[in-house]
Length: 153
Image (cartoon, rainbow, N blue to C red; front, side):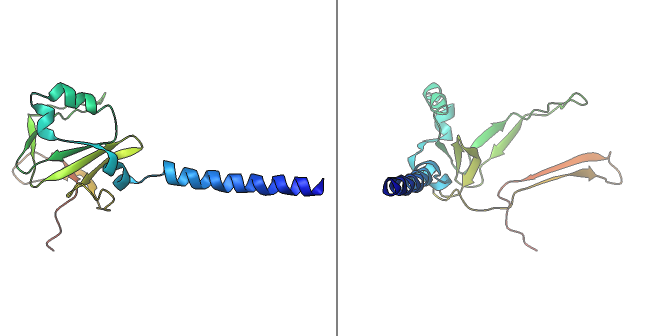
């Protein structure tokens, strides 16, 4: 009997190690691995004649969207507030260079300049304050740094 109980103790611990290894291999793929198997299409396809088919693809993540240099991307900026409202003019982002956006189910969106490395640790930032100039009204100053240009200082 002692021999049998030792056998089950050993096989239970072996099963636990095997299950842990399988979980690590199958369930913990990083962003770069997700990008390798992702559907890929361009931003132009989201706005062209294939728009409906491309929008349907966005529901099946992961997805990598390629933005090309010079493309103009309209921005719909909204503020959800019981205290203020935003009177925003129409805004447009213009792609300075080609880049890729990874949308995934297990994390936030990530950017890549080459469509391969989405794990680069760029320090993005957010600034909130007031802009005070002598001959102008005081303005709320908001800055978003997304993959900022290298500092020239």
